[in-house]
Image (cartoon, rainbow, N blue to C red; front, top):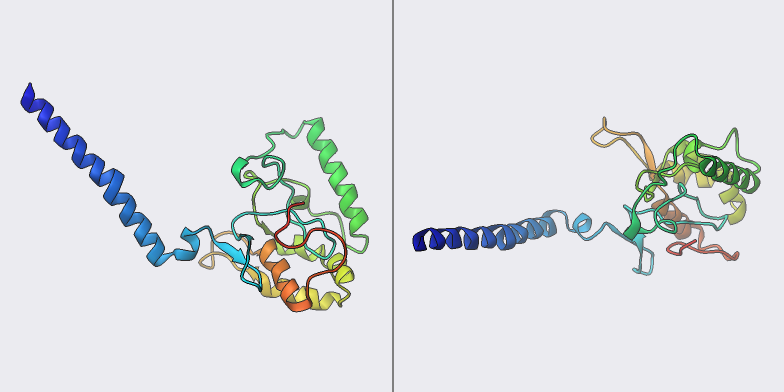
Amino acid sequence: MLSVLVTALRVCVVTLVLTGGLYPLVVTGGAQLLFRHEANGSLVMDEQGQVVGSALIAQGFTHPAYFQPRPSAAGSGYDAAASSGSNLGPTSSKLRDRVLADTERLRRENPEAPGPVPAELVTTSGSGLDPHLSPEAVRWQVARVARARGVAPERILSWVETETEGRTLGVLGEPRVNVLALNLALDRQFGRPVLPGPSVGASP
């Protein structure tokens, strides 16, 4: 019996050292060496070097000079500690009312926008934290952003094209635009807006 207990104890200690010590150290060290930016949260900094968010997590923008992301059902909205969808089904009256209200608001804020409101601007992602929009949904907002910044829409559109990411490895996913990265690029190029409202890195 004693020999069995000693063997079990040895296995327990070895397993603990390997899986609880060496393996995490190797994985963490490898991540810091090979993918330091991603391993540390893909943090995004402004021109002053201050962290204003993560490239992986959306944040709300209500200022007209900034592009707006998809709505969020994560916690009170864009809460990285409460990632979730709304869990509302297609027959939900609450979902219908929220989508109708968002559609009316977007039309009111974007009177020059062409065509109907893109569906992704009134529907939440499964995580509530999707930081990307399709190029089409971003271009739909160009006229409002250009007007608020006092620049020609063509200049804003050129930055949309610059910040558009292609398919991963050329075949996976769809072209997309990181909303935070685009808003920061506009601030660097045209300066931060002076109108009242939250700026980059601020909560709605």
